[in-house]
Length: 399
Ligand SMILES: *Cc1c(COP(=O)(O)O)cnc(C)c1O
Image 1: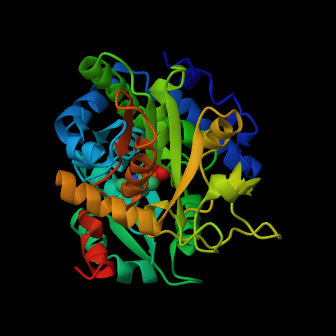
Image 2: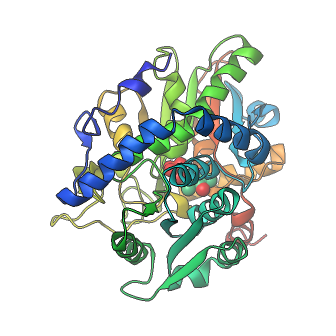
C-alpha cells in the first residue's frame, strides 16, 4: 500500500512534468539542502517519536470518522462519512504540516520560522506550532488583510509570533509573499520558510504531503475497521491541495477507490471570479514550480476569488496536476451558492458547522450521493470548522 508516496516525486522534485525548482542556482542549493536534512532528520527515532506524541496529545489525533446519517438520509443514495479534521486543535488540518515544519526547523537547528499569510489561517497554525516547539516565528501579512481578519491577527499576537504588516503594493497576500521572501533571503541558512500547502519548489510539495498523509493513513484503517471495506469515493476541497493529498495518498494504490478534488467555482466558471486552477488553468511556472495555473496572456498570475479565502490561490500542487493528467483523480468545482447551501445543511442536519473551504467538498458529496446506490459510501475530508466563517455567513444569509 502507498508505494506511490515513495516513488514520487523524482530526484529533481517532479511529478511527471509538474513541480521541480524554478529558481536561481543558489536557491536550488538551499532547497536541496532542506531536502537532504528532511530525509535524514525525519527518519530519526527522536523526530518520529516527538511527532507521534504531539499528534496524539496535542492535536488530538486520530481524528474520528463520523457517519453523517441525517445528511445522508435527507439526500438519499450513498452514505456520507466525514473525516473530522475540524476537531483538531486550532480547528483544521493545517496544524498537521505546521507542527511537522516547526519540528523540522528545530531539528535542523534553524533560528527562525518565516511565512506569509492571507486570511491568517496558515499564520495562526504556524504561530501555534512554533509556540509549541519553542522556535521564533515571523509572519508577514498585508495591511488590508490585517484589517479584515481581526480574530486571526489577535491570535497570532497572543501566540507570540512577530507580525509584520506589509504596506506595499496591493497590501494583500501577493505582497506579503514578496516581503516574507525578502526577509528569508537575508539568512536562508538559519531561517526556515514554512510553505502553507503542497505548493512551492521541491521539496515542499513532498514535505507537506508527507506530514498530511496521516489523514489518509488513519482514515483507511478506521474505515476498514468500521465498514469492513474501503470507501467507494473520496472527496476533498482543493486550494493548494494539502488536505486533499493528505487524504488521497494512502488510497492511491486502491483501484476501487475513486477520488474527486473540489475547486472553488466562485461566482461561476464563466466569470472572472473563481479559483478553478485545475479546471481552467494552463501549464506554466509560478512561485518556483510548474503546475496548472490561472494566468493572463503575458503569463502573470490572474486575480482569483472564492467565498472561502483558503481556496483562492492561482496555482495548485504539482502532484494534483499529475493525478489529473493520468486521470487517477477527477477535479470538479462548486460555486459560492452551493457552498453556502452545504454549509447550512451540514450545520442544521448534523450540528457541525464546517469551514467554507470544507463546505465545497460537502456540497459536491451532496451532488453525487444521490446518483449512487444506497450500499455505496463517500468519505469527505472535513478539513476545518466554521467558527471563523460564522459571522460572515450569517450576514450573507441575513440570519
Ligand atoms: C487552508 C485551508 C484549506 C485549503 O488548503 P489546502 O492546502 O488545499 O488543503 C482547506 N480547508 C481549510 C479548513 C483550510 O484552512
